[in-house]
Image (cartoon, rainbow, N blue to C red; front, top):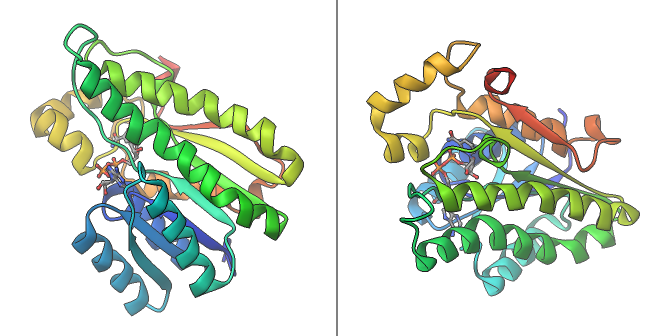
Length: 248
Ligand SMILES: NC(=O)c1ccc[n+]([C@@H]2O[C@H](COP(=O)([O-])OP(=O)(O)OC[C@H]3O[C@@H](n4cnc5c(N)ncnc54)[C@H](O)[C@@H]3O)[C@@H](O)[C@H]2O)c1
C-alpha cells in the first residue's frame, strides 16, 4: 500500500481520471475527499469506495470558489485529522481558435483550469505546513508542451499550470511540500469524447506510438507515484503519460 495512512483531496473526482485516481488512492490505503460539481456522480464514486472497504467522502467543490475550498479542507481535517496530498485534476476543455475565443470563454477556462489550482494550493498549505510535509500533483496536459490550432484557451491554461507547478515547487520546498505536474496525452474519457466525438478520437491512434489511447487508470498510476513517498526526492518535475506521442 503506497499511500497507507495518507489523506488526499482530489478535485474533479466524480468521473474520468479523477474517479480512477480516487479509487486507486483508496486501494493504496489513502482516505480520499472527492471534490467536484457533479454531486450525484461524486457521491456514487465515494460510496463505491466505501462499499469496497476504502475511506472516501464527497464534497461539493467548485474549484473557483474559495469558500468551498475552505469547506473541503475542513472536511478532510474533521473527518480524517490531517491532509497530506492534493490532486488538482478538475478542468474543462473548450474548442476555439485564438480568433474565435471570446474574453468570457478565455476567462472561464483560466478561472477553472488555472485559478482553481492556485486557490486549491493556497487552501491546503496551512494544513500541509502543520503536518510538516505535503505532495501536490497538478494535472496539466500534453497541451502545455505542444500546440494544436483549435483549443487556444485550454492550451494557455495548461501551459500556465506547467510553469505554476515549478514556481510552487520552488516556493514550498522549504516546507517539505513537493509539487509536480502530469501531462496526459489522449486519454479515453468523457472530456475528449464530448469534445471530439468517437470518430475523431480514433484518428488519434495514428499519432500514438504505443498504438492505443490511454485510459484513466494509466494516469492514476502516475498520480499515485508522484503523491507517494516513492517520489520523495522529486519536485518541480513533469511526467508525460502519453503512449509516446512526444517522441515524434
Ligand atoms: N482526457 C484527456 O485526453 C486529457 C488529456 C490531457 C489532460 N487531461 C486533463 O486531465 C484532467 C481530467 O480530465 P478527464 O479526462 O478525466 O475529464 P472529465 O471531463 O471526464 O473530468 C473532469 C472533471 O472535472 C470536473 N470539473 C469541471 N469543472 C469543475 C469545477 N469548476 N470545479 C470542480 N470540478 C470541476 C468535472 O465535473 C469532471 O468530473 C483534466 O485536468 C484534463 O484537462 C485530459
